[in-house]
Length: 76
Image (cartoon, rainbow, N blue to C red):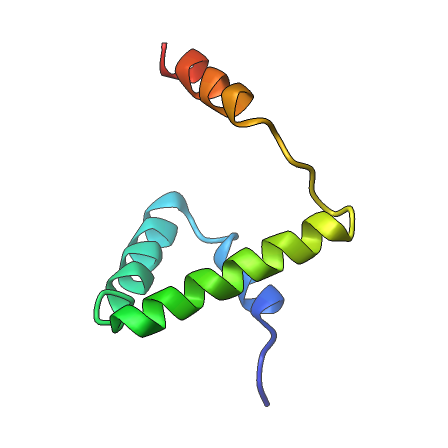
């Protein structure tokens, strides 16, 4: 039986910080060998999903100047 990503995510988020960090490193390392086209395709899919969420009203756009202002404020 195939487990849903949401179920796995829920379980993983119950792990302690060190275990989650180790898992995150393992997952990120597993992506290092992607080809340029695989990497590009993943970003295209992500962009399309985010745009669909925006069109569906699930997210909002934030002006770029505001984003950078927030980032500068957090940096202090």
